[in-house]
Image 1 (cartoon, one colour):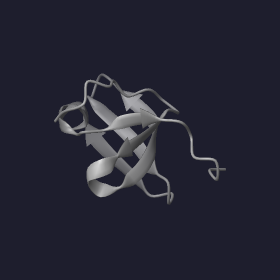
Image 2 (cartoon, one colour):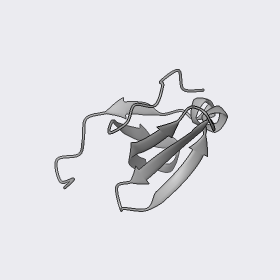
Image 3 (cartoon, rainbow, N blue to C red):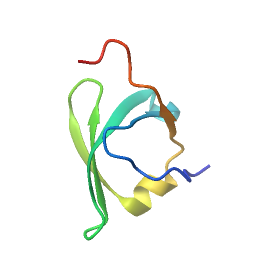
Length: 66
């Protein structure tokens, strides 16, 4: 299943396949990349094709996120 969800800066998402929560920290439409920060603080970058191939869902920000 793929995501029809467009990345939104500061929005939180859940990737059930890897049981990971993350938020979008930057979006560069020119280069086609999305920068994300996992709940544990790790930073990663995805291209938009990869983003749309993932089965992700938008969620509320975790209560214990600061």
